[in-house]
Length: 189
Image 1: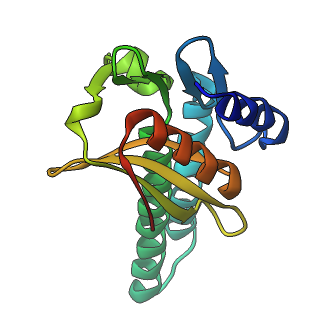
Image 2: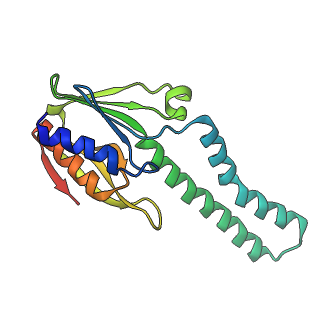
């Protein structure tokens, strides 16, 4: 690594948002590690997911409502489940430890969340630098008030999600460093 890249990693450690940005560790290999999603987070998310539908279903059985109002409540419940599942799935798919090794020219992606690591027994996937064409940096809104970026690898067949970074400026600079290390083009969207 160049001195500029090492200086950025030190700057990143000081300026990152501890709630949303992953941690970067450099010890010959660049390791990017977001916060782990643990079992208690999964249980809490499940309770949040079923809370609105349970309340609405309980209300429809306890009180007499018109058929259209019951269908409306069921629609709201279904919409609640779909939106929550979609956001949780997006968050889980990028909860990976990413290791960039410029000596062996590989990027390894290891799931670190409880669901994929402990329950589904997902293993680490290693991608050689030659297996992808470019690095994508896609600006995304994680929720209503928090913009951030997705860091992805792109080849001819698919886009491989690496990690989410909540601070756009730091995510852009990190993508530039990864682009320099892998000798791949950086595409900002």
